[in-house]
Image 1: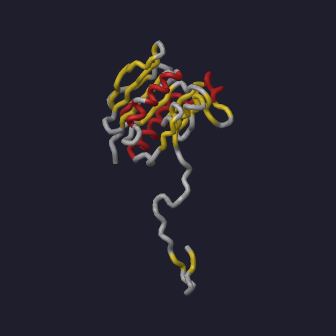
Image 2 (image 1 turned 90 degrees about the horizontal axis):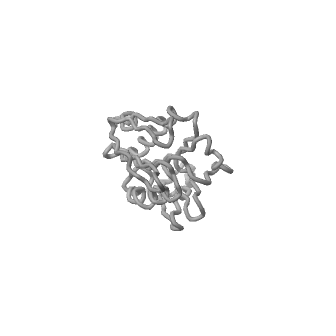
Image 3 (image 1 turned 120 degrees about the vertical axis):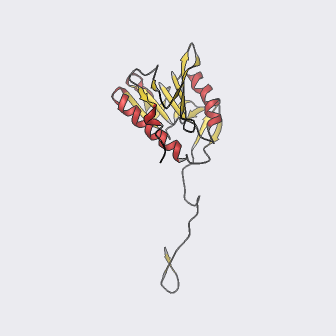
Length: 186
């Protein structure tokens, strides 16, 4: 608030976009992809519930990180998965406060603005760099596609529903009841 000539406080109306917000983007194959919108409630709700599930299953066996966290595969591929898991034996990829290397498991939560890239170029990039397991979580249809790296290629192991228990093939401690991840909305 600031004062006017009468000494009374005046209000300044702020609008969306007025404040400085650090840009969020990824670099895939040397091309910059901007995050144009903040995630919706359903995305963030699933993200939080997945984080809790990862933490209760595997916190003692590795590191669980949430976006935004840059994963530097190389100079032309810096991605921000929604969740990444790094087992203790692979912790050396965390250097100087950042991730430089290949996590053991990554999760992308689909949204209107990112689903196409998550299913195509990001999946291909994770596959090429050797991420052992990749999950695509769909908060609308309440599904998780579980991909495992087999002979250098992702193979769909299963599509899990909210009625299933998802067990990781790459992270032995990780088993998640998807009913807790996809709880009924408020």
